[in-house]
Image (cartoon, rainbow, N blue to C red; front, side, top):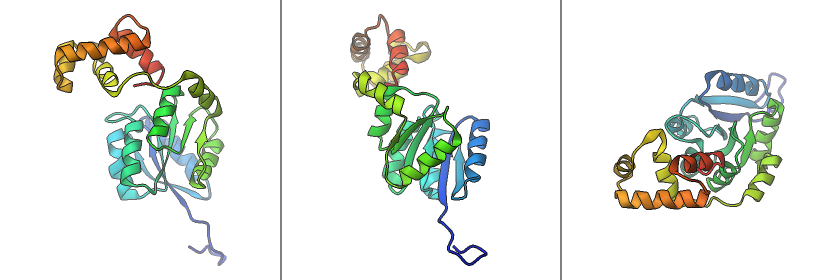
Length: 212
């Protein structure tokens, strides 16, 4: 690409935004498009739209929120890294939880930032990630190290997630194709590991720590 003066222009960084709040998504897109070297080429509001849209738009980097309708940004991040390895993933979220950071890194994300920082910091983080660096909110990194790993197994996380909104053991068993006795065993294990009194408290504690 050549500018009107005949000089070679810098390549434009193509960005995909995944954010369910329309006002926040629009504001981020506007601010990033003001950067000379960036262009928001796609915007989605649901997690299950991320991979399909990325394969169409071919962004250089995807900025993903975590709590999205349809599918979490963390789950989508892992699939996106498989489907489009050339696309870097930067998690940008309101929820600065140590467990989320660990899961983001396991999903192949190159960075994790909390939304309360200035947009200049976000633009700088995008450039650093594309330069091959890993960018992590320093306070959250320290908290993640002190918090330790997620104590819950995948099945324990599944049953806790399925138990929200007052679901019965029979409901959970039907949804996950497990026996009710097996569901009770997983729930009991999760309650014990979280040091809580019942499954509702266990789910709340797990969410607060970013384990779900």
